[in-house]
Amino acid sequence: MLVLVTELLVLTMVLAASGIRGFAWEDFALISLFVLWIALTSAALLCGLRKWLDRLALTTAIVTVLLLIAGVTTLFTVLAEWALVGADFSRFGVQINGYDLLRNLLVSLVMAGIVLRYFYVQAQLRRQERAELHSRIQALQSRINPHFLFNSMNSIASLISVAPDRAEQAVEDLCELFRASLRESAEPVALARELELCRRYMAIEQLRLGDRLQVNWNIKDQPQQATLPLLTLQPVLENAVYHGIQPLAQGGEIDVQVAVLRTGKISHLQILVSNPVVEVGIVHGDESGHRMALDNIRDRLAALYDGQAKLDVEQTKESFVACLTVPFKEETD
Image (cartoon, rainbow, N blue to C red; front, side, top):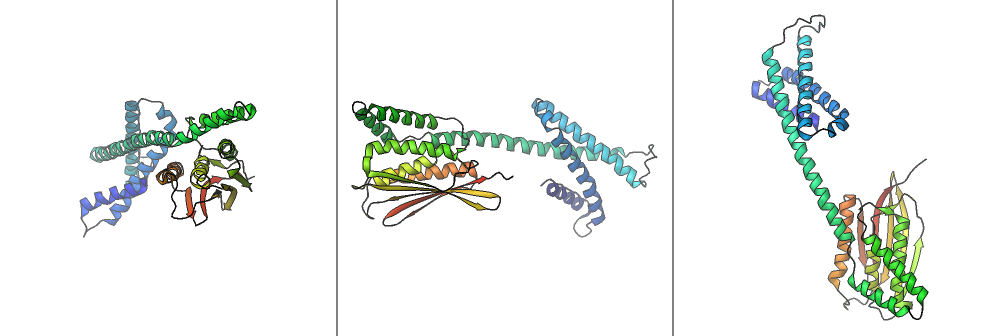
């Protein structure tokens, strides 16, 4: 991008000086070489000094950058003058054209100012986007189904007198789920951690639905490097319970399959969640809530993985299948 912008600048300068018909290709080549040396050298120095510049105040950093670019421009202007007189570096008395030096300094400083302003606005925009993205992810992650909370508390209350141990375990499971939902970090967690939370969630739902809810955990592969955004799989299971198992009088089984698709350097974690559904045409529950849960997951995946992760769904007359695919990089020896 830097080379492209530099060449466009040189093209504009040569066109303004010579016009289209008499376009000076030799001047274009020489000026391109000169300006590219200034641009690339300045960029290399700024990259090398980035950590030091980060510690300076904004105004001080800007002045320092402009002075550095001015110094590089002066240096290459002197070298260009030496090259024009035969590259005789012993002729330190060569006269530098003050007009050319002033022109080069003005052009480089004006362009540097424009570029600095552009990068500053871009940095502020990225900072604002990150803040908005963090708030958005937190809002999506903290979504708790109030019906799940009320049903869980009712189940725990009914178990206190007849099965206190199961009630205590249910309270621990519920607390662990709430602790995860209130977590501030948006960093992905290990697959094992997400599966643990999902097992706790399903254990709470089984207290309410009893034998009507069966879960088949078919985990073929569980690499340590595989990660998921926290509480991403749990809403998929919640969707399967509330819109699949609960409306069925006889209940049913939720099948969870975890596998790894290895293609090239980037592997993909694939999780399939399938559940039976009611007969097509018979509507049970809140269908808008059904769509909202899946849309929330898609929003989180899009925000965190920039289109590399996806959630696909497929519904037939007898079943509903959700396929969650998330990339991860496996460590190689």
